[in-house]
Length: 100
Image (cartoon, rainbow, N blue to C red; front, top):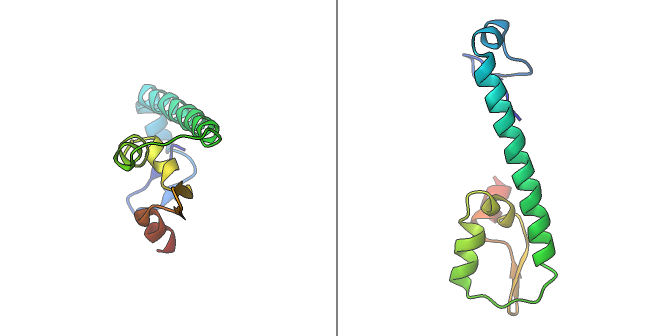
């Protein structure tokens, strides 16, 4: 979601009129990019969901590189509960973030 943060670090529901007028093209572009990002995340979520039903064996380093360290997929993957051989759990950094 695109939002305006004022000088007092408060998030505002709407952009000020001056910003909407002087930067209308920039705001339109940013809104389009935000929509594209939301579509990408939805696609990745569906892809991960579909892959989770397939029995696969991958080296841990490959899973980390392709899922946990990926700029888009990583955010989703770090929230999942993973089953690796006989171990089940969440990536440690995700568990720490959720407790803070």
